[in-house]
Image 1: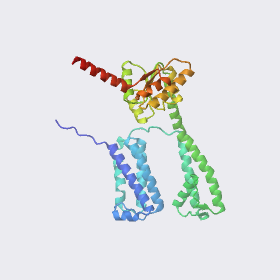
Image 2: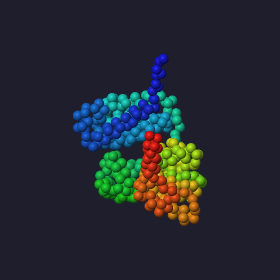
Image 3: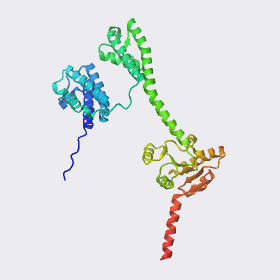
Image 4: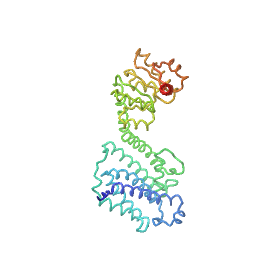
Length: 379
């Protein structure tokens, strides 16, 4: 029987090459500007660019970042990433040729363009989130603000101290909009001062609009998700709350699952929270020693609270917090069950409000001794 031939994952291969091309574009744009020309000469790389124009180097860096970001979209077979990548590669090729490079410099970009065209049907997935009108306006406002600052400062360069090239204009605009203000470039003439005075409100409005339109919906979506989870927990009733994911709590959860009991695990370690969710458990990622967490978990509607953390001090603190909430509400439920490893802490746990104190180590030792005695009697 012949071994089946494994199909090549075209989107994966293309995305890796695109990301590689992006890092290469970053290197060819940054290294010369940082004065590392001699290092490149010693390595004798065939993709060495000459002459090294500052503005072209900045463009290479920007295009390289775009390609690295687009690599993820191509891996996910996104059609929009495919379209944008074609444009970015075309601009990158033109930029390389304008910098006076040899034809070999753009071979990788040409090869990528060829692969993207040949395998265009592989990239047919729609975008995950389509941009709405507000997002488009926000992005356009940022582009307008940057363009206004760059073009205006370059045209008025004679009235600025330190602006002579497009690169200087880009640097000045970014520094101005970021409110850093190093002081190395400053308006000197009357027109330049008026221009900078107009840049500041335009930048504030543009970036405030972008922050509201782009970040606001995502924050709102996440907050709604968190609130819906908390509301779902608060509607739980007669459930068992297990604090901490440990070897003991894993056994407790397995036994509760056999009796079809509803369980909620409070675990603030994200990696364990994801593991529990994959196993099908309800998880609240928060600190179990806080009243807010126990309230979100629906403590007063639960039948039992199991404090199963590895540290005795943490378990007793959870028990104290739960007992205070239960006493304030004048409830007899939930039953507070505390795990204690150090036998000396058992009376302390009982004093702080635990209804049941279980010491796995002590129980294990008792069972082992009992089995050993039974074996001795048989002998």
